[in-house]
Image (cartoon, rainbow, N blue to C red):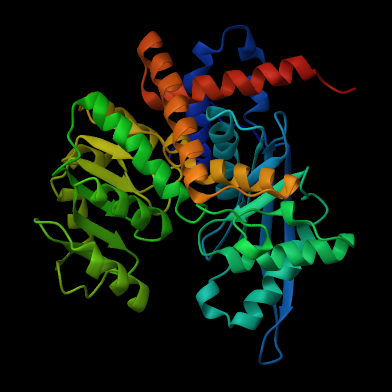
Length: 425
């Protein structure tokens, strides 16, 4: 496996950037004459590291490290979320930005890939400190973001309020209200209906289509969800509405199990009021590692990257994996799942519902004309179903996995645009 020789990153095969590079290596044989441009996919176009100093409530000056990486701008402005997490690193943000490039091209959105983050535990900050952090970070990366340059969005531990502060800060600095600089905003600031549940809806739509291909009836299907935040809970609700049983759930608070399925009408209020699934009276508490032993029809990893390693891949008892998170499966684990006949719908298409509705929001902001939620959902479903069909056709044609097929379709689009644009000067 070849790795980029970027001096500031020393990836391993199981690190986020190493995983991405391994995925690129696998797709090269399917790129034909475009393969000569492949190294442009192995090197981010621009990586920005910023110091984010703020005055804390007690008067101390604290410094946090922030990142914004633009992996590719060949097909349009950068697009990707901003996460606040104590484990954020430049390498992780690079990989997430690269996966955004693939994701946007896979569903044929006119965006490149970007991602941002701050190494911080947001739960340790007051609301005022969080606002200061967000505004300073936005000012620091303001030199490379903009409605036609790079459009941030919510990600892990960020939300509509964070986006509102980012939009306001950028607008103050440029002297004009620029609603299109971020997506995932509150509705009254130019946000879009359907955005909050869009990623989870995309997981459901691609899962529904995959189940149909497998001959798997969603009625009574057993589903396990890792990560019960916005993505995981939204997907769980939609599968539940389709007649499936949500039998296991895991988040940062613990793991719960009920062979007969949870009553989501009771579980959802519990999660909202307590902050997690732990302590839910309608289920049994089980060990976190036992989550991977639960027998299911559908498994949805919707937490952080790197969750399915080789050991877990060997013992999974499921038919279909829907990657709601970015990069949840190690490359070697991917091979094991394929050998075992477990179908994986990869993150770069499975969770693309969020960025698709972000695109709708961006378009609506420019036109100042907003669609109904039904219109949003119809457009989203049509794009997701069409994109998955195109990818599945490529997988059948080349006899490759859905992940490699997704990369083949996406990389061909990115590199064809790169070749047609040429190099400047």
